[in-house]
Length: 142
Image (cartoon, rainbow, N blue to C red):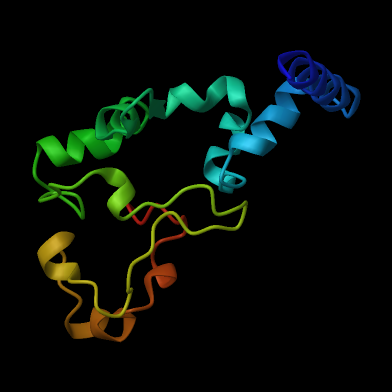
C-alpha cells in the first residue's frame, strides 16, 4: 500500500511539473485568488511571506513596513487611520483580483471636516461626496 501511495505521489508531482513551472502550479493550489493591481508585484508563492507571517497570517506590522506614510499618519493620530485598533485586513481585503477594491469607504458619508480637517462648506459644499473633483489620485491625500 505504501509503495502504491508513493507511486501516485511521484506521478502527481511529475504531472504538475509537466504542466509548467512547479512554483506557479503550487501557488495556484495554495492562493485564495489573484492580488489586486496595487499588490500585483507580490504575486507568486515565493512572495507570500512578504505579507503573511507563518502561523499568524497577515499582521499590521508587515503591512505598515511597506506602507510607511500610513504608519506615520497613525503615529501622528491624523487621517482615516488615526484611531485604528484592528488589523489592516479587517478593512482591506486582498486576493480579490486585479480590479478588487482595497480601500472601500462611503464617499458620501465621509466626515471631511473631522478626518481631513477641511470642512466642505460654503463654496466647497457642492463637492461633498465627489472626492475625484479635487483629488486626482485615489490616495485622497491631496
